[in-house]
Length: 270
Image (cartoon, rainbow, N blue to C red; front, side):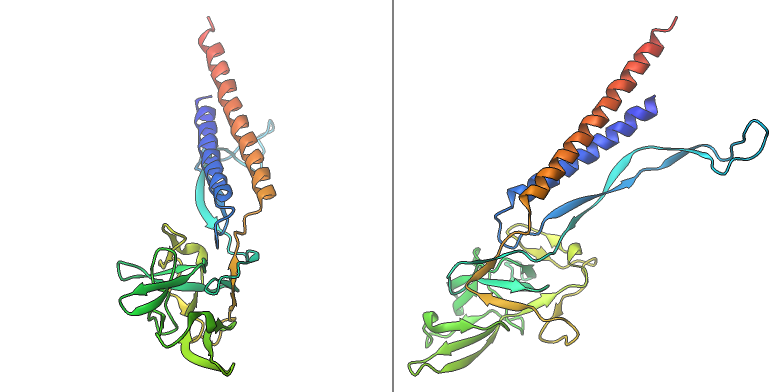
């Protein structure tokens, strides 16, 4: 009975983490570029009561006796499926169709990655710089900040699906500005380290970034100007998952109550 107490307690702990993950998904249902997370579970150790068992005639049975000791959370995995594209009309909002990530220069000198393409123009030390909402510069295919020269009127700038900047002059001619937004992919995006502000960082699990303009083996992403990628969280699915997690939590709590009552009865035996 003591084994059942600890086993059920592990189930309650695991389901509490599951509810925490679901609540985070629902909290970020309107977060641009957010990818839903799901909990994964693994069984704990099994206790071998009897390696071999026999029937009444002394013949060995095909299986032994093992009792499980509960469950634990093994991982929290992000699901990198495509979110819906929402039109904003802002000239420097970009959505990615595909598996790519924007590259962002962080204050500590490292490079962050994000699916949140809500950018704007900021007056930085280099000039008019394309930056995210925190003022961090967006990087081009060479890993350099994207700087718009003063000779260009930002309202006349368009960006095609390959991330190339074009300027429309007074004759309505499209002039390539020699600027292309950098987009990177990862072999295992679920292994990226999540930090604040929708920024992700490279880890050993994710592997090194693979730049789309360099790697011909990659399926190229497409950029959509004046659009943002919405969260891929489905409210109905999350509510169903929440109900399932809550019921699992309740059942484990009932196991603890039942085991406690059995222990109480055993203690009252005379």
